[in-house]
Image (cartoon, rainbow, N blue to C red):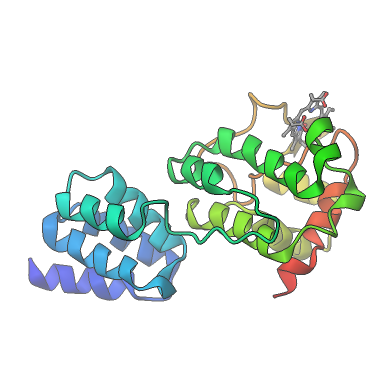
Length: 227
Ligand code: UYC
């Protein structure tokens, strides 16, 4: 009914992500009137955050013709602009994240960091910490936005950084918080990690600690996060 739709619309435009997300879910289940509210919301590019990411996901899997037509016309590749200063193609990452295929997205993220670090890193398949400072700000912001927009704001390097700073940069406490370690026991890759939104905030993307913490330390200290 119209009163309910207008209440949900107001909730969608609030500045509280939890309320926005629940409005998105309800609107997606309210027939064509709800779908058209979601379409209007996505038309305003200023809304390109986690609520829009969720709206995009629900529209793309809905059976609404209006919703499908709108997405095909306006956002055929997803809603996050894929800026790169190195000509790196983030579309595969966008597709995996919008489909909530977080395990594959995590592997592609590492692959993209290697591409940013250069051919030597692509070949060795891991990033040396001295390579991190030269990553372009634009590229890290793109990767981070993709993770945040398609994870209801739960995943991403900047999210890990917030937690890390909140714990006075104490790595051990961060590992516990991210569920990367429990007591003295490291979480085993890949089977013991949680590859969906039930994971703790900041759980993904992973940074392998086998070669020490410095790669992640440089990543979380990058100039990109000062903007
Ligand atoms: N792995 O344990 N990890 C791998 C993590 C460690 C190890 C990949 C994260 C501890 C080995 C990813 C944690 C450790 C391999 C991650 C974790 C260890 C491997 C695939 C919790 C032993 C095989 C990408 C901090 C005690 C590969 C990649 C190899 C792989 C992630 C072992 C994403 C977050 C200290 C033996 N682990 N990793 O980097 O290189 O290969 O031999 O962190």
